Length: 222
Image 1 (cartoon, one colour):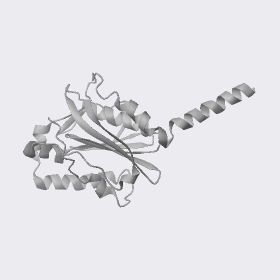
Image 2 (cartoon, rainbow, N blue to C red; image 1 turned 90 degrees about the vertical axis):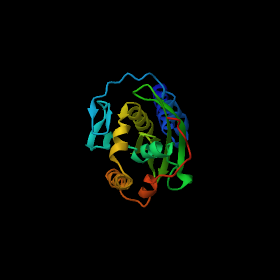
Image 3 (tube, helix red, strand yellow; image 1 turned 180 degrees about the vertical axis):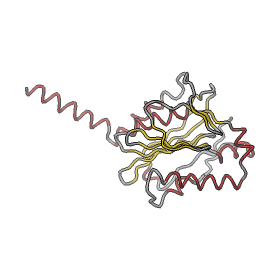
């Protein structure tokens, strides 16, 4: 009996270690080690500006022409067409990746790489995770997509996996974005991002900083 009790304690401690703050870099590095895996998903949902694959283990709570709001367990994920990034790339020849928000002391993880999209193209992206008051916020930025996530420490790895999966299985019709969005509509869209984000996290004074474009001066070569 004592042997089984000891084994249970060891397994419990091991499980606790897996969701410790110190384990975040190794855990998420493993998730993003699959960013260029073969991509054979069949897209099953469509809006005016993008087509995407919705996994059976995620619930779609709300959607519009340029966004989708998902839930999985205790995690909320907001995926937006990155209209500002597409317009910048089209007219200025570069993609502006978000350069973080709030205070860098809360940054607990950062990764920059290239994911294999559903069209077989490699696309540059950045992923950052911040801890604010015990809650974990993530931002995924590529030229065509901007995805935000809110979750607990225990669900951070799972949420990050699903954010990467969404990015890899979403096809944005960039030519339609360029044709239909002007400077004013981009500003209106960015305000809508703030309004949408407030659906998944109460306003705490950092939302506008979270959603503001901050040029990183990075050219993704696309």
